[in-house]
Image (cartoon, rainbow, N blue to C red; front, side, top):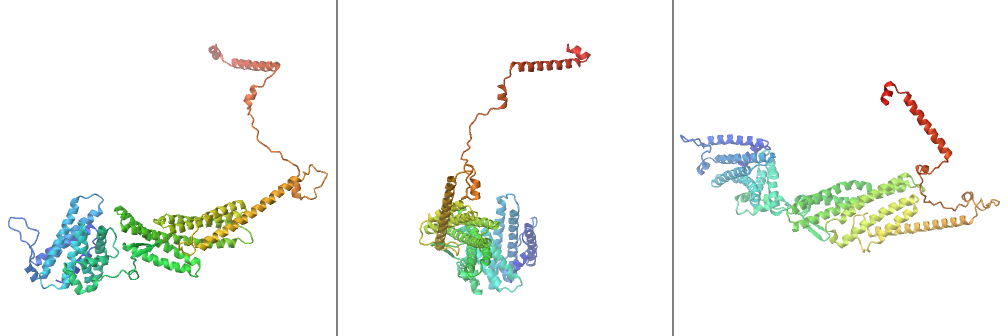
Length: 601
């Protein structure tokens, strides 16, 4: 009996086993194959006279196997038929939206148990026969471990599932490395990646509530633990010992990170996806740091920020998903979830600082173009538009600084908290300083001075720090903070001096204008010491102030009632009204007809 597992894998791949109907066709095909095998090996059960014919064939004995080892294909075909029925029911249950009863699950478990029993019988008979070589036995062990692992998975026996699938994984790798059948290696590796590894990962997660860092190492360790109990391990070590060698977890070799150290905190990475994502992200971040610190133009480095920021964001999303899973399993006080919070804070901290660094580069570019457009002391509309754009970028930076202060664990680190508070205050003051500059350019010196004083108050209220934590280049340093305080202080003093001088000049002008007599009062004297402007403003002294006076409103209809006439006027008006009324009544009466006059009497 040669290559029993390869024959089964090739038979499965002849049909696209995806839907319930595909598994039904495969079960029908295995049933026909079973009938042919039983007939060829003379294993058909003849019906007893007067009784119904039995569907099952004769049992396979050890003598049958010694005569012809190919007879074991009957048990393998029986196992495949039961497996196909279980998968058909599983696929049908997953594709329907209606709630299935427990009898469906019992049916699946029953069929998988039957398949595991047939596979175990084939393995037991093969072990008792001397004619089987190690390669054929290993294929039988691999098939039996695959079926038994699936049965354990359905019954939620996670430890047993990991053991069986670990043996199957090592056996499949050994067979794939030694096979000469065209195309079978790719199909076996596909079984490992799509079936075996996924079931091991899920089983480990159910036991430890963490996703495994390296599935292959976990499977190898579980297989080596069965060295004394499972005969397949001895065969694997005899054929290809490298299959069970556990690789080191060196990040430079495996593109994974084991541990994250940040701000005196150390977190162990237990998720394979997070470890791979962090390794890739840290690598990109280091390349970005080198290019930003180099002599290349800022515009060239801006294009690199998008990929790095997206990579940090994806990593943080992965960690947040893990945190949600931990919280849903009520393990919020375990060390594993504390490690996840440290990794999440590390990723969020790096993401936000890189975002601020990108925005500071954009600020420097826009500020340079604004200075170029402000030439010869002339201010055009574009300068104010650039100022609006700069304010919007400062708003984005302040959003990032607020998010930094809200990261988990920040308030427990006093040094980092003070540095981040200084960072937030620095960019608040820079934003207000920019608004003050815009007011100054518009000629609004009082408003500009108010902005400068507010910005200076924010910076001077910060506690004195010996040193800030290390931020990326261009974000904030102790020298930048001191330079901002000095610059805003100088502008404040300068504006105060300008406004004081303007006030003194205005007071002197108003006092001088009050001492000069009005032109109308000294018409005979020509004001020779005054300018034309001063003469036109000093034509007359008009110091009266207009103030509103409260009065009682008098409406026309009320006033009309108080109008009185003399007696003659009253009589003439009354006689005129009486005559008019009599004329109108006569006119109405003369116009009535005979019937109207008769009825009107």
